[in-house]
Each structure stands twice: as C-alpha cells, then as structure tokens.
Image (cartoon, rainbow, N blue to C red; front, side, top):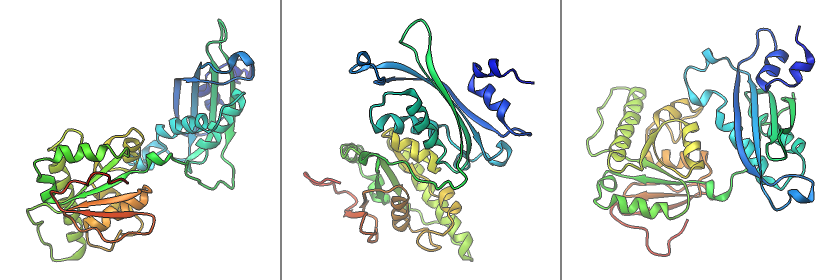
Length: 314
C-alpha cells in the first residue's frame, strides 16, 4: 500500500508509478529544468525574475519496444520544452497553478500523451522551495492543435542543383541565406552522375531517393554548417534552434501517406512538399527547377551561380 502522505511529497515519477495502470505505461520525464521567469502576484515580484524549476513526467500511449527506434514515432522530450516555452511566452502570469495547467494542456495536445504530472517550484523565495504539482489526463475528445510558432520559426527551403552545390562561393551564399533571419533547410538536387536505372517504377523511385541523399552528403561535405538530417523531429529541433539543415528525403517520403508529387523523386516537387509540411514562407531554387507552389509559398528561381540581389527579402 502506498502511503498517501509520503506520496504527496514524492517526485512526480513516484506519483506517476503509483497512479499508473497494471502493467504501467511507459513514461518520459524531464527534471530540474531551470528557467528565469517573471511571475508572481505580489508587487515585489513584478519587474524581477525568479528561478523556477520544472519537473515533468508524461505517461505515453506507446511502449518503447514498438517505437522501432524511430524518433518520429515517439513523444519527444522537445514536446515538454516546447510546452514550457509556449506557456511562458503567452503572457505574464501571477500563479504557478496557472502556469502548470497551461504546460499540462499543451503537452496533452500530443496524441501520444495519456497523462502528465507537472511540478513547478520557486527557488528564490527563501530557504525552501515554494511549489505546486498537478496531474492531468488527456481529454477523451482531444483534438490535436499545433502550437503557434513565431513567424521567424517558419523556415526557408532552398533547392540547389549540382552546379549550385559545386559553386566556389557556396560559403558566401550560405552566409547570405543566414542573414534572412529564418532557419534554412537545404535540398540537394540531382547529382552530376546519373542514378542507376531499374526496370520497374518502385525500385527506381527508391534508387532516385537514395541518389538525392548522396547529393545531400556531397553538399554537407562542402560546409560544416550543413548537417544532414532525415527525420521530422530533428528538422523541428534544428529550426527551433536556428540551425542549417540538409534534408535526406528517403525516410520522410517513404513514411508519407501519399507520395509527394507522384512516384518520381523530383527534387523540385519534394522541396515544395517539404515547404508545405513546415509552413515555409518561400522556396528558393538555384539552378534547379521548382514548380509553382500554393499561394502561401513564394517560389523564387535563380541561376546556379547567382546571388540573391541586394534588397531581396523573404
């Protein structure tokens, strides 16, 4: 039997274990996450920041052995951090209770989150920790709603053909792209060496996707800022941290419910598809053909060795 008094002061992981089903669900946790926050109802707490500690445990609807070692099929730790960021970014709050409830609600938007335990403590109010702990279950009528991203988080998708990848001033082009103030996702077009040809469409499609991944690694070898990534979770992380990525398309395209742009691995169509997934503001094509996109995605086309002109913005 669990002692309810000791459980009340236990770590959220202990509470999660005590309240969970049999067999217990898997849980992910983030503990001792410290943030400097202006929060509090007292006048002395206005205009100053306090150190706030977050401890969060999330019960998930999947088991570790069914995740197939795939980061896109689990609830990522970034979900917890993003929920805290979003809750703190909405408005100044007076109460830890309100902050904890907002963090829990944002985490429970994720379809794999079943139950969340949130503990928040103020560390600067005395020789003790003042805090609150809540437990929330996912509502039965949950409707996933994506968290609103600041405008700067919407990426710039850039398609480079083989000549653009090989241009001697590639570093200068990447510098220029970085000055637009948006995360950059680079897509490498067809390499100069043609891909092998298969006798059937599906094997050819896979071969062509692998050829685009080879071109991605060629691009990554030219500049240390170009990091090859193949999962949506890692692309999300790179965008939120302002990193430059080179997209290896096979995994995301193969996992897609519908083949983007038809069965052929056309880099221009894939770049537009990627732009749609991440609500990109624009697609820039250097030497590579990019078809016209939907109204909300601007398409700009340049020669392989061209530089965006002065005054150009996205």
